[in-house]
Length: 374
Ligand SMILES: Cc1cc2nc3c(=O)[nH]c(=O)nc-3n(C[C@H](O)[C@H](O)[C@H](O)COP(=O)(O)OP(=O)(O)OC[C@H]3O[C@@H](n4cnc5c(N)ncnc54)[C@H](O)[C@@H]3O)c2cc1C
Image (cartoon, rainbow, N blue to C red; front, side, top):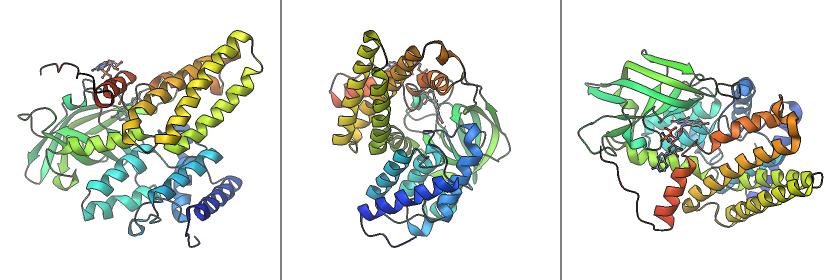
């Protein structure tokens, strides 16, 4: 790749790189945070293609296979992908959640071991946080990892683990000290999914796809060098990961939102006055979100507000779209998929109720909700 000096030059070169890849059939269409099974092969190819062409890990260090550019350059990459409607990465769980966590908290050996293969697609990651009894209240997790010499012995169950059926590694939270208060005594691990005693069972969703899984651990022998950060200090590592997850699409999100709003305006011309009133209502909410992201997109305080507005808007958009299409939307079309998929977005990455709690307590300064003992 040619020497890059400015953001504008980078934008031009990125747009040209993506356009070539779209023409040659190497690019994969955009699909959001979770890799859908039907695009698995195409997405793996696209990630490898970007890596081979020197166009992966824009702001990651060169020694780990990245381009060594700034986070601003990375935003440009995401914006250009959004403009061309191609996937900016293989999956969020790997390139953003695991990758950034290893960059922040990994040892030199862990960076060396994991970063380059993550960019080249040799390692696809999943996120093993949620459990049947611990989703919103993540600190209540029960999966245990008990120290035994150079190893930990892992037992328990995770659920909603997106892409676990394809993953070679998972970022895992497990309880390593049950005597400590619940936010303490949790350790963050980089788990090899090939280890004996791990069973992955895909869950069929109402879309017909199986994007997420249940994962069971029975006496899994975890080497101690797969701890990320310090033993019993995993809560802090995980909170930074959740911040990355909720921070979401940023400026690139604004671009796809703008495209959706334009489509909605076109539709408004073709519907009756009741329908167009609904379109205008959604359009206004979309414009408000767009302005917020443009003004404050990089501010971590905005993450729960943007997450809440975006997922609820997506749900209402899908409902309206199906209303406008009539019975067609109940058949097998893109809007059927959208209609069935959209409710999940107000749960994934923290539910809407939890975002409202965060906004109330941390942004508006309202009293904290009462802690339930235990
Ligand atoms: C599409 C999708 C992909 C996902 N991918 C992953 C993944 O890859 N890895 C992973 O670890 N997890 C994943 N999840 C799980 C997700 O993080 C959890 O579903 C989410 O955090 C909610 O937890 P829960 O399902 O246990 O619901 P619960 O926590 O049991 O909540 C049930 C209901 O109670 C409400 N509620 C709970 N507590 C409160 C409260 N204090 N105040 C008000 N209301 C409350 C919730 O809002 C919800 O409506 C995914 C989920 C979805 C939908």
